[in-house]
Length: 258
Image (cartoon, rainbow, N blue to C red; front, side):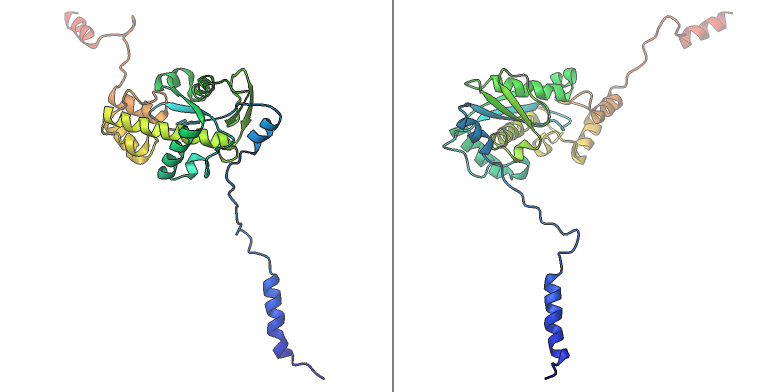
């Protein structure tokens, strides 16, 4: 018996088509939520309390850096914790209230003046360490978001991308973010016209336009480049005369007298 190749061809083709690998460049990235796994591992070893730390506001041109430290209740870890940047404002507010109701937490603020004096990194680390010390009970271990460990009397692990990995850090990121957002809305009432209530001090075009038009406020960070440019525009610095500076009027009068 001779098979009809024309009939079997479509089946073969369909099998080949289904066996083809996915087109290059099309990757599916699974986003996992932070877990309480690291904290629980320490609890099993008898290490408790365990805190998570994070800050909000390193990048803006105005306003303080706000740091938070959180010790979650192992039996009441809020569901849906995540990096604050991946949450909507409404969801952040909901989780903020839940964290405040179930966990121990503290907040510390580094003002623009401290940022100007110490630089943004040192001011942030100072605020994070201060938040840890302000907890009701000093933790036995701290997880902090980023590369840098904190100056604390307890053990400290720096976790890069920790707000998306460690539940306690994610909770701290929410506390810090919501607290700072509310603070910037309050500063907007003190300094109207800059739009702090909208952009929270970040260097978006609307903020840059207002900064160029109004000049820096007392809440701006003096040594950030756009603020420096706006200050020079609105408050140009004239050169101080020294012993060798020739006054043009005196020179003209002396010439006439001669």
